[in-house]
Image (tube, rainbow, N blue to C red; front, side, top):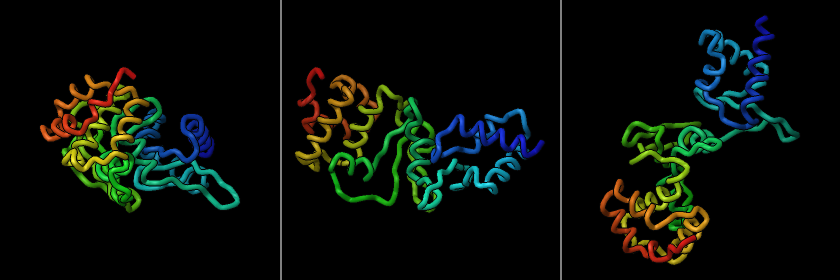
Length: 216
């Protein structure tokens, strides 16, 4: 009976989650709420010993794939993206700091620290460790969703830069391309800027970003 239930757990996990996708303990517990927490953990441990699932970090598992080069793994980036930024159609966070500046060609520096602003963080700022990587989490200034995440991303970039004079032509081109691809409007940026510091609004006005927006 015990082995049968463990196999059922694994099969249901494979049905719900992709291989090499972070699976959080609370997701597993929710799927098997008819069983006690202790019993579910025993099933998880059994499945882990059989190599059906692998524990990546505290509270994080995944279903591995195997090839001639060995067993697959996941990364800290995979975990934080699902937990704090986006999962399937749900968007609830954006990247910030050097990660974001690198994306828009403000810097070529590749940061060791991952910085994220998220609805799923309740503190103004805190640091956590995932698989040895430092993650800086910040509470979002307003609710982030699929509709406003692109505009929030632009404003977060302008907020992190400190001064719009740091923006070079390549960065402006990157921002323009991003806004066009994501249909970010001038009205959306101006409205959302109200929840950011005054310096962010100043950077928005003097950066020239608003001048390049047309009716996409």
